[in-house]
Length: 80
Image (cartoon, rainbow, N blue to C red; front, top):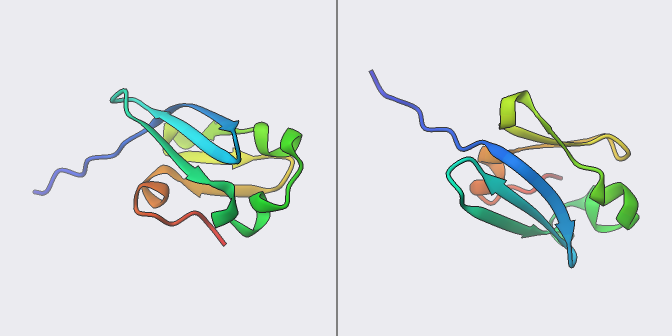
């Protein structure tokens, strides 16, 4: 049996044109909003409204109807 390791988000916020995520292992990761078609042109208020979903494995922007997985972000996939 192979054990799957999954990092989970415990906090997410928008800062200086980047989405910042604090993981359950205390790491902080960031990615530029320019890497996502929906986020790059969104108003700051909408980008700042980030929900942690799926027990910490995903992020959701309700004002933009955008979802990303933490594992995808860690792999460099920032959405559309």
